[in-house]
Length: 213
Image 1 (cartoon, rainbow, N blue to C red):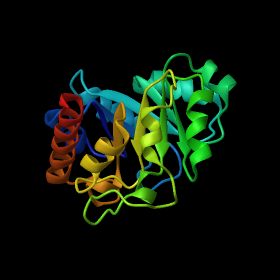
Image 2 (image 1 turned 90 degrees about the vertical axis):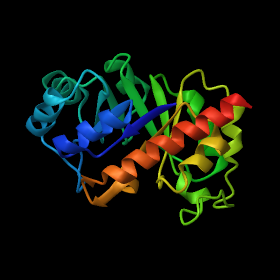
Image 3 (image 1 turned 60 degrees about the vertical axis):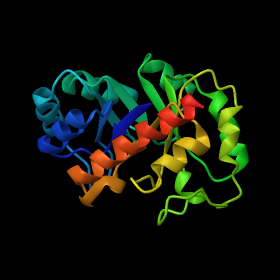
């Protein structure tokens, strides 16, 4: 199970994520309350241990700008949340994660269309009761389809995840990974170490249970 803590703005949060066993941390370079500058991201990344991976989050930035920031900050991967196409992904080499908004079943089929390292599906909250963590009916999306879609690449689930529902998300979708940001925060851009720890532990336990059955 690949686990990413996104929206990192402080070194202490990055270090906590690493200590708790996160596989990746994300730095947002697009408009967001969690946006950081390349200098901030570089400073944080430079003080981190070798693991977790550093991921930059971008929205429709020119590919040459993405590559420049990736090199400057020492990013391992880039996550694309705009209208980037396959040619754009190709320009970044084997480091692109393409995020897709999921509103209906047809959107799940797009997983197979992209040439990238992984696909991130942003929309799990629409089929989840975030209050108790039990899967719900939502917008009529059958997330179990992810188990049978032959995408040829890893699928990461995101959107509304938090410690109370991540286990249900893992058990329902059997993803390669999960991505969380606001669900482990005490304020925008400020991570809560207890919530980060609980999220990572519950995600890993659910993944173990899924693969052990």
